[in-house]
Amino acid sequence: MKQKPKLWTKDFVMVSASNFLLFISFYMLMVTLAVYSIEKFSASQSQAGLASSIFVIGAVLVRPIAGKTIEKIGKRKLLLFGLILFLVMMLFYFPVNNLALLLLIRFIHGFAFGISTTATGTIVADLIPPERRGEGMGYFATSTNLAMAIGPFLGLYISQNFEYDMIFISTTVFSVVALVATLFLRVPKLAFVPDESEAERGFRLSDYFEKSTIGIGILVAIIGFSYSSILSFFTAYAAEINLVDAASFFFVMYAVFLLISRPFTGQMFDRLGENAVIYPSILLFGIGMFTLSQASIGITLLLAGAIIGVGIGTFQSSAQTVAINEAPRHRIGLATSTYFVFFDTGIGVGPFLLGFILPLIGFRGLYASMAAIILICLFVYYVVHGKKASARKKARGL
Image (cartoon, rainbow, N blue to C red; front, side):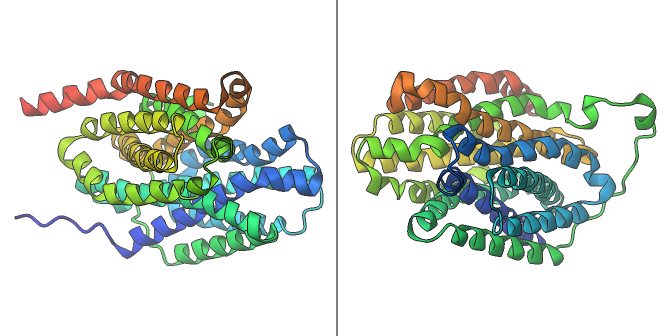
């Protein structure tokens, strides 16, 4: 029996750890900065929302530039630059004394985050053996998924039990550890082949976005938009239905069941193809969101957390693997940045738009509506990629 190429190398673990620490910092700050702005600077609700979301705007704007230049500059150099900038901006949170300065810091911090996470996503694609890419990207994406679960929990816990500076201290420590880990990272070197016609042809969107990623990116944006309803309104929903105690374990269930499912779903992707994993993951996410909308006792809320964790966690890693597999080798950096531009946009725009809808339909109506949108994504996936993937599989069978 042929031995599988090694996946769990030192470098794979290092880049996954750095990615986890970046994302946990992002989510810790995302769920606490709005309240911090109101309490410290007497910000309005809209200003507080901007203090939270302007970080995402910075990340979205810089990702296409990072994706375009990563091969030219070098993946490790770009990651180190992003991490150093990320750490420096973390230090600026401590002396900030007005809202305008906080917004500027958040915007530049988002730049650093966008640069760093584009680099980690591109580097890991080079480190994973191609025949284990589904499995490897699944494990790498777990670093993001766990941060999505642990970050909000940790941020809310610290803000409720300590001074806000403790959040900044924690995220600064995470930034230092991520930077130190990267200093020991070795990245495979690929020869950079410059496009000689680039200077002559001037500006083109294809220089900043990977065309093959746009289809799956549209789907990812819709899924991100739906998930933002949990990030933004879950705590208020839990309070309304008197399940605050159970809600504190929602993200624990999310993380535990995601981890349990990860070894199976990644191998299924490599063995059976993306459709065998992505269709069920979208369906599970929709079912989980509908279960959340109907929760009236703690066990139902926790069941929703488990189903949503498996659903969106599996979908994210699988969709990112599809984006990388569809792109030419020298444009994997652009594919990674394009993927995250769509996902970040969905996450960033969601709270703003859903805030207008929420007063009209209430929390239960909101989550039931999100479930319907997610189930429609089964058809969207079929159109943007599923049909093509199925045809390829049949062709190989012939």
